[in-house]
Image 1 (cartoon, rainbow, N blue to C red):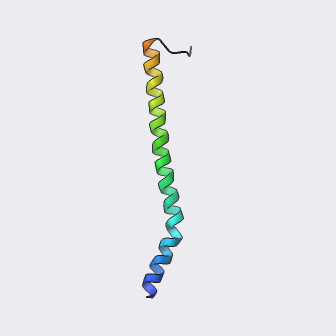
Image 2 (image 1 turned 135 degrees about the vertical axis):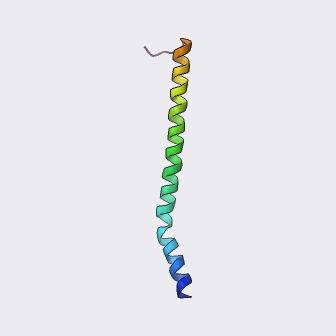
Image 3 (image 1 turned 60 degrees about the vertical axis):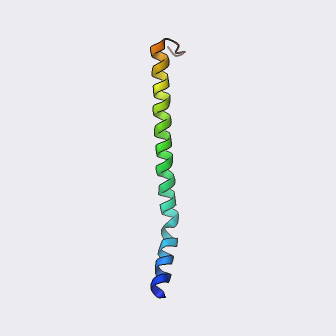
Length: 54
């Protein structure tokens, strides 16, 4: 019984860290995708001559 209780308490102790790392990873992937999408749209507008920036 002690082994089960120790395992459960270890999992509960590390769960916030694991969830935080998962959220950070997913947020990083989303930001990377948003950056490359915006970058591609900027270059597409620039190449077409429709870009509003200098």
